[in-house]
Length: 443
Ligand code: UDX
Image 1: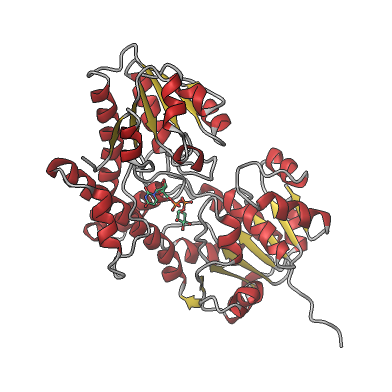
Image 2 (image 1 turned 180 degrees about the vertical axis):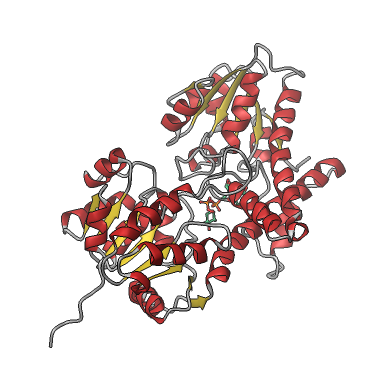
């Protein structure tokens, strides 16, 4: 008996999401062709180098390049010819002129791929898009394709966290596919066969619900973080301890302890822009009041940055002018080199603009930070960054900073004063060793 032919897969857009998705699909045994319009990215991936920091991805990339299941190209014609299932994984950043999502790259993928689809194909969008985008894209691609309505489009949102991209792609906590087409559903079941076998929930919805699952998940996570950060604000005013408060709340399993970590708040390429795009879309749909609370979620988040700066300023006598400041962390979170909307860099560059000499160290994000923020100084180690500092700010909770030895740091700083922007350190320990320790939401 002839073994059933497996579908061939293309992945359009090879950023954090697409590169990870392409490598993981190959790892699951599929033949995969990744496409990006950026030749530098394709050159790097083809050579087995991941152009960003993602633990575990380089091994999977190299292994599947070597066994021939994974290739990369910049040529849409090659992709159209090769694949039966096309995943769209391009970015949807915030527009420069409004809060809405910029759909240029999604539209370009559809416009470029569509006219080349001469045989039946399934297109599955994974990018985070405003609700309603997929229905328009489905009609458009069928209109463009010579194969017509034998080209069908569904939407399957991606929930991967940077730093855990491989794990989240191979073992997601759920798979959602928005479609009313049996063929799209069957394609999604085929590529998800391993996960379905493992008992991972597989949900079929309409297009709109699938789009909404993603943005509402991110809105919920952002709200949870801002909730505890609002409690931190109240705790500061009332003399309470938000860490103890969060711990006590977490034992109620209706609330749970995840994403209840108070501190400098959320950043990155997803949460901030997704809640803004969600509000913009609700406005267009005429249900703006339904999401007006997200404006407050955003505002609470921004206030934490200002508060961190105020605490540091207070510690050095009320002005940053001419002072020396050491900053630990540039990435928006640990285990990532992503600096998009990074709270750490926002705080660091605001302090620099107020007249301080700010030196930043981050284990992975230095290069990207240097390009984006030439206004800051950069050091190649933690000790170098805090040398002669009159105040130290811990702004991204890398393990290296959590485990820092207060005695070692005390030897090189000008003043043993630290603002723990991520509630990552043990205050009693640092104070016992002579440090003035301040954190958000704690006495
Ligand atoms: C997020 C979602 O988790 C993911 O499902 C989605 O696909 C993309 O957006 P990511 O941006 O990689 O993933 O980061 P995440 O781990 O969610 O952290 C987001 C931000 O929240 C970080 O800046 C982090 O420092 C902050 N955070 C997280 C807190 O401030 N407190 C917490 O308790 C948790």
